[in-house]
Image 1 (cartoon, one colour):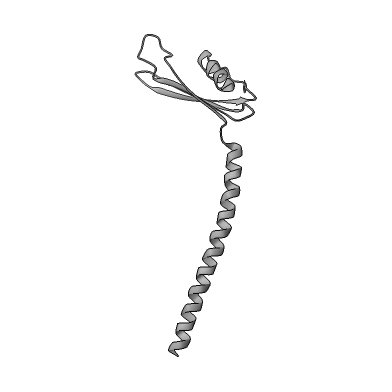
Image 2 (tube, one colour):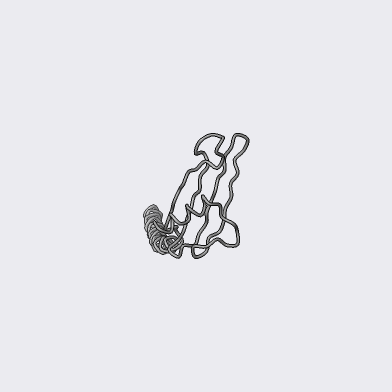
Length: 117
């Protein structure tokens, strides 16, 4: 009886180890394909520009973050900071052009600099 129980424990341990290996192998293959999918949507060009939108107040506390892919499509994130508040804006860029929203002169400079980088 003890021999049968010991044998069943050994077989179950082997079986669980084998199933764990199969699951690991399957997830490893999925992980590689997931990385390939992510690489196609990662930003290709990144630019961070700091500036002072208010001449009379403070320093370069505001910034523009421009994230574009290889087709020059992406987003411009602008943060305007003053003593009372900070505002954050996001604008869509498609093929290097704004998507119906007006860009400030700083945003236009950042976009051109990002496209040319």
